[in-house]
Image (cartoon, rainbow, N blue to C red; front, side, top):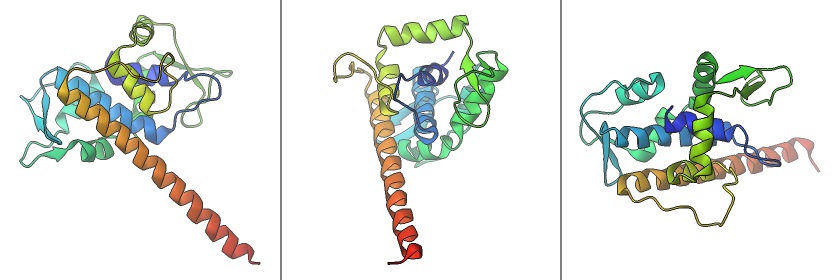
Amino acid sequence: MTTAKDLFIIAMDPGPGQSVGQGDLSLALAGAELVDLIGAGAAAVDGDRIVPGEPSAPHDRLLAEAAAGLVRQAPYETAEDWLWRRGRDLSAAYQDVLEEEGELAQERGGRRFFGSARVEPVDTPARRRARERWERREPVLVALASAVGVDVGGTDEEPGVEDEAVSTVLAVVHDAVTELEAVRQRRTIENAAFANIWRGP
């Protein structure tokens, strides 16, 4: 399992009164992929730009797609641009793949996540490994989950990440999710104002 798949599984059960937005999760999944590519030496971060490493083909299908999608010509792509480009509809893609792999199952009484299907995690070794990373408060997983609104428990202070490139990616994920929320709020205000115009005095 990849960090992105672990994040998706954790995000499916954020706790009572919490919900994870599809757009927020898509951005965080793109960040998780980038973290794994950095860990595998397939990418590095120079300032705010993603510098591709040696071409690689990870065993995971979606991670292989992410690696193949890296911009390989200078001045390269910023981490922020990567999140918005790669993250488009990425949460739906992960749901489809996890269902295909048997990690999620459609259940009549299951939790409604994205789309019309009701899905819930299946008790598999991969799911248990994801939960183990979560219970250990693995710093990257906790930071990504926190960015999308999952209650990480414990103190307000998230565990630190020592790798500078990974820290940069996590910071960009937080900024992108914040920006997306600002766009949502602005649209809500604009829609409300438009509705008031049509209603009249």
